[in-house]
Amino acid sequence: MADNVIKVGMADLKHTLHPGTLVTLGLGSCVGVALYDKKTKIIGLAHIMLPWSHQAKNRSNKAKFADAGIKLLLENMIQSGADRKSIVAKLAGGAQMFSYSAISDIIRVGERNVEAAKQVLADLNIPVIAEDTGGTHGRTIEFYSEDGRLMIKTIGYGVSYI
Amino acid sequence: MDASFLNSFHLDILKEIGNIGAGNAATALAKILDRKVDMEVPQVKIMGFSEVSEVLGGAETPVAGILLGIRGDISGYILFVLEETAAKILVNILMGKRPDEEVVYNEITLSALKELGNILTGSYLSALSTLTGLSIKPDVPDIAIDMAGAILSVPAIEFGKSTDTVLYIETEFIEGENRVIGDFFLVPDTSSYMKLINSLGAVC
Image (cartoon, rainbow over all chains, first blue to last red; front, side, top):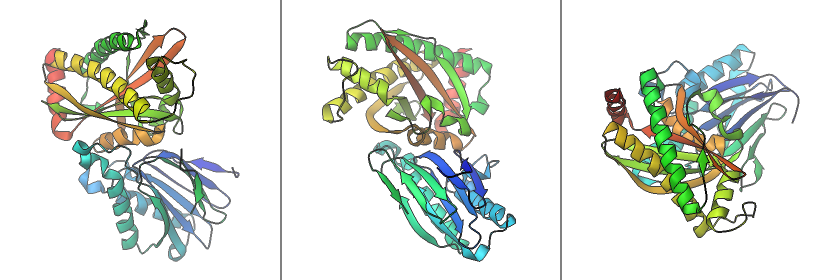
C-alpha cells in the first residue's frame, strides 16, 4: 500500500491530498462513493449506509446518508482546494447480502443506496465514470489519489480496478 | 434494536434472555454434535458503527451469517454470525469429520450450517418469547458467507435508521479444544420496536 493510507469507517467520510490513499473495508449493502479531482488529485471517499436523510429519525451523522454525505464530502474537498468542475465519481458496493424475500424492503437497501447516490451526483453535475455495484458479495476498496484508480477486492470474485 | 430506548433493566433482561437462549443453544448443539458443549456467560454489547466492523476479527474476516425472518407478535429478523473458521469446525463435527478438514461449500454443507443457525437462533428466540410472553416464530433460514463488514452492514443499516449504534449478544461455545464465538443481532422492524421494548419492560 502507498504512503498515507487513511481508513474510512462505516457511516464515515474522509478526503486527502495527493499522494494519499483512502480505504474502506468490507462494504456490503453500503455504498462507497469515491470522488476524484483530476486537476489537484484531491480524493474523497464516503461510506454511505442509507439513501435519504429526510427519511431518518436521527440525522446527526451526515456521512450516513447519500444526500447529506456526498454534499459534505464535496464541500470538504473544495475547502481543501479541489476544483469543483474537474471532479468525477466512482461507485462501489450496494450488494444484496441475503436473498430472504420476506424482508425484501430491507435487503433492497443496497440497490436503493446506489440509486440515491447516482441521483445526488447527477443533481450536483458530477459524472459517474465507473462503478462496480450490486451483486451478492462484499467489497473492500482502495482509492488512489495518484491516478484516481479504485481497487476492488472481494472474497471469491477476485481483485479488479475501475 | 435501538439502544437509546433501553435502560439498564432492559439490558439486564436482554442479558438474561441471552443467557437462557445460549444455555438452550448449547444443549441443542451438544445434542446434534453428540458431544459435550459448554458456554461462557453471554454479553450484551452496544457498539458504534466505527467499531462494528472490528467485531469478529475485523471487517475483512470471512464470516458466515445465518439470517431468519421472524413473525408472530413482532416481525423483523434475527442474524447469527460466526467466523468462517468456526463455522467450518462445526460443519466438520456435524458431518463426523476431523475439525480441521477442508470444507467445500455445497448444498449439504450449506444446509448443515443453516440448520445450525436455525437451532441456535431458535433457542434464543424461544427464550425471548418465554420471557416476554410474545409469540415469536422464526422463518426459513438464509445464509451468506463473506467479509464481516459486508454481512454486518445488513443489521447496521437497519439500526442506522434510528441510531448510531448496534446492539447484539455475544456468546462463546466451548467444545473440547474448540471455541466458537457467535453473535446474535435481533433486528425488529420499526413497528415492532416499542412492542418489544414494552414487553421487556413488563418483565421487570
